[in-house]
Amino acid sequence: MNPRTHLAIDGYADAIPAPGPGQGTAIFDLIHSPIDADRIAPDTPDTVYACTTTDPKLAKVLLTEIQPGDLLRVTGPSPRPTTPRVSPDSPLTVCRS
Image (cartoon, rainbow, N blue to C red):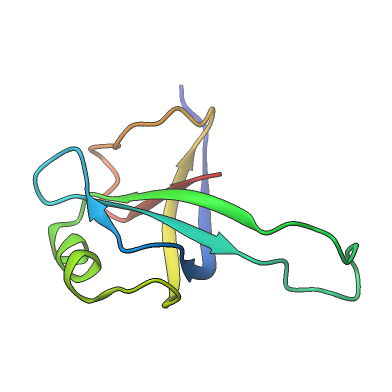
């Protein structure tokens, strides 16, 4: 069994999203910065999430409207361990750090 964690992450598009490995999919990197600056070290790095959507409507928007630096909120399951693949049963955005 593949345990999953449901994520909701705010971040910025690192680059223009690209077509994914399948029809109606898109891939992109999401940059997530630590939000509680008072409780973390000042040199704490940003986290980069490699994200994939298998929802054709979301993929179309990502591929036609999103630009680097746009603020995005991604939601969906994150499989563990984080093996790169598009999950056919995850219509929302899947992110892996």
